[in-house]
Amino acid sequence: MSSEILISSLYVFALAAFLGYQVISRVPPLLHTPLMSATNAISAISVVGALVTAGANYGKVSKILGLIAVISATINVVGGFMITDRMLRMFKEKTGGSDKDKTGGSGSNHKGGRH
Amino acid sequence: MDLKKYLIEITYLLASILFVFGLKGLSHPKTARRGMNLAALGMLVAIVGTLFHNDIINYELIMIGLVIGGLIGAAMSIWMPMTAMPQRTALSHAFGALAASLVGISEYYRHVVDSHETMEAYKMTALGFEVLFGSLTVTGSLIAFAKLQELVRGTPITYKGQNIVNLSLFALAAIIFIYLIFVPTATPLFYLMVVLSFVFGVLLVMPIGSADMPVVMSLMNSYAGLASAATGFAIGNNVLIIAGTLDGFSGFILSILMCKAMNRSITNVLFGAFGSPSTETGAALDGVMREVVADDVAVRLAYARQVVFVPGYGMATAQAQHAVRELGDALELRGVIVKYAIHPVAGRMPGHMNVLLAEANVPYSSLYEMDQINPELPATDVAVVIGANDVVNPDARDNPKSPIAGMPIIEVDRAQSVIVLKRGKGKGFSGLENPLFYKSNTGMLYGDAKSSLSKLVQAVQHS
Image (cartoon, rainbow over all chains, first blue to last red):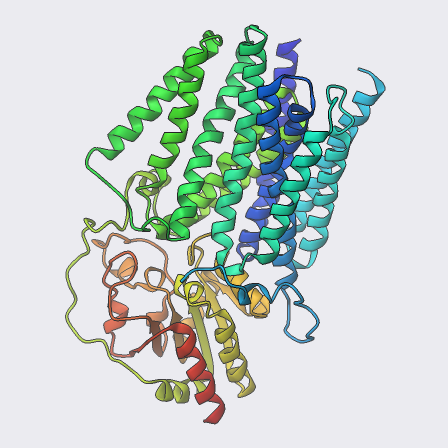
């Protein structure tokens, strides 16, 4: 039983690695920051493990650890996809038009950066 | 398998497919947003599917977690300024890795501590990797965050025998890990391994200078992904393996690209403590730096045929991206061809400068990669360096003894003339002398980049 799971998991891993290499090597340097936040959001899929840990009857320790895990994974899911979209919305082929950065452009006006 | 379980697996399969489509969309800015929407849909499907998992009996904690996490995530993504993108990304690597390690620890606790079961070797191996990678990424990313936010000083923090301490610590954790595979019930050792990984993460990133952050960020990206993938192995969940592997490989590819762009190996970045004061800085340079005033520069820019802007981290710290674009616009109005040259490691994370310029509404068709712009520089009238230093240092090309020898650079020294916007006369972050500043066709414009640029905009408009 367990060795079957292991073998099929290794298949999935190897194929995903190959696919990942193919897909990601085509991403232009222009989009490397969005790429990083996008893959980060996607790998927050570990939230599904966290959800089960937090919601199942696995004992008190699991519940607490699960809750923290759900929170931190969800931060990445929601934050990751939203900020990736906020960035991608800013990439434009040619300037012109003025409706485009309702939230995108406002970012740097906020305080909270360095200095 | 009952029907419900099949349905959950199908949502996971769907999510995996949508994730791949999402990343495929990132191959072009035009398709990127649609791609990411698909990926987000995939995530939603997987989360909703999981809520029907048979083991879940209590939704209270789940809802609390989803709401708190969602609010924090949304708030961070709405109010985080674009210049703080590297910090945010470092934090999110820490969160992602924390989630993965906690799931791993709780899985171990439940089986071994609570139920006094033993653990199959393959599962223990997966859990070990998960906890090892996860924990070191949590603390490593937090240190990276602290350095980027300047809570900790950005220069390498080193001491004698550092590498030996780090390596022996890592070796110890590895030995414990191997022992645990054979004797999974050695609970104290498991906790010791977790603690060692946390400590190792701190020690690993402390000696790395801020200028090397693009590599660190990429590596942490990779480790966080691999930790998720290991979680997938441990709990037998394929979508975790797929998503984690995609993330892991993405980070890995980026690390390699970043290292290539600095002509250094990953080992050298991690253990070289580059840019520390003790680094040999090469001979001090003779000659003078010629200071120029904004009005003269403006005239030169206004009557140029082609101007190339080369932004660096200084543009981010000065939040000068909007001012750069204003100057670019003013010049374009006068018929000057304006281009922006982006070095792969300019800034603190891969693609950092592109995002900032995009934020300032610079169209991506005006952004040029290093290899595209270099052949054009000899025919460029003025190259304007904004808060960049090492990435335009001709020593990297000409002086084999330079610590950055062999690093590919944007060859602004080959342009007809160069203007360097710099805060002060001091050396750059890495402490290296830059012969570019002493060249006869280089003018130094001192002051805060943002206000210097605003002065230039005014002067160009009036000339």
